[in-house]
Amino acid sequence: MTAPVLRPAASADVDALAQLHARSFPAEPWERGALARLLVLPKMHARLAESGRFPAGFILALVVGGEAEILTLCVDPGLRRRGLARALLADLYAAARAIQSARVVLEVAADNAIGRALYAAEGFAAIGRRPFYYRRPDAPAVDALILARPLA
Ligand SMILES: CC(C)(COP(=O)(O)OP(=O)(O)OC[C@H]1O[C@@H](n2cnc3c(N)ncnc32)[C@H](O)[C@@H]1OP(=O)(O)O)[C@@H](O)C(=O)NCCC(=O)NCCS
Image (tube, rainbow, N blue to C red; front, side, top):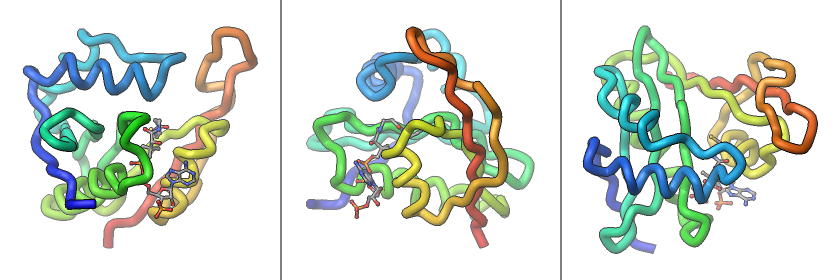
């Protein structure tokens, strides 16, 4: 596969981001308005991956205080296992390193086996757990695992 094209995500991309998020997290899609508010935060790292000029995936991370916190990362279900998440993460590491961030942190649902596989492959390790953090409509709440990866 050719290298994915990454570019900053802007307010004009909010519909594409909302669609990608809903397709990736059908049980808990983020509203368009919430995404729009996140996109304009000053320390927000927002990157869109495009495949053939179509939105294929995105990452939102707050890069602040020596740490980058991933808020969400998703790739269109039809375009997975092509290295897009890896490319979005590599781009985040570079941006965070450029302002001397020491590590990347995130929360992932304990039952998200694919997300956990991605982050394990990327060198993240568990540093904490928030019990019953993610509510599920017809099932018990699920713990959040807090993962971190040094950037040095
Ligand atoms: C998790 C997600 C972002 C991965 O996106 P992706 O573009 O398919 O990931 P990549 O192709 O870059 O995969 C990188 C590595 O992650 C791991 N991985 C990714 N998908 C996997 C799967 N289905 N099963 C096992 N390992 C997987 C592998 O180690 C993979 O490397 P490899 O393909 O060389 O084996 C995507 O599946 C997604 O959007 N899921 C729903 C949203 C989500 O759970 N986001 C993460 C929590 S915030």
